[in-house]
Image 1 (tube, rainbow, N blue to C red):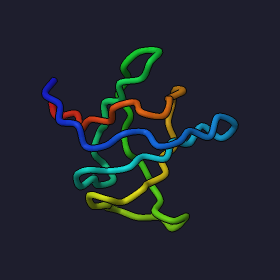
Image 2: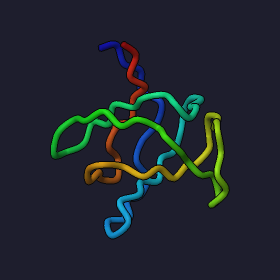
Image 3: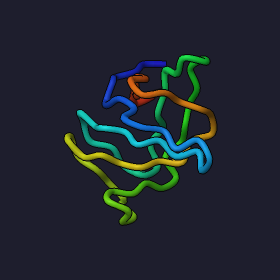
Image 4: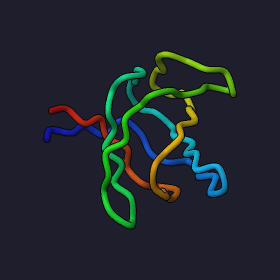
Length: 84
């Protein structure tokens, strides 16, 4: 699977399993992310995301998005766009 880093985890809210991700490239709902977490890499589909608590269909470089994730992540974990 080809991958390109598009951001890093900025913060993780453990109780609600939401990651705040600072993007360095564009991202759209429907794409898949490969998150390189300390506990192990995993693929996370982007079914929805928010920017400043407002639902968004796409985000651009520099945006800080919130994304519900299936596994625990840590500040500094790499976020890559997964291409098949």
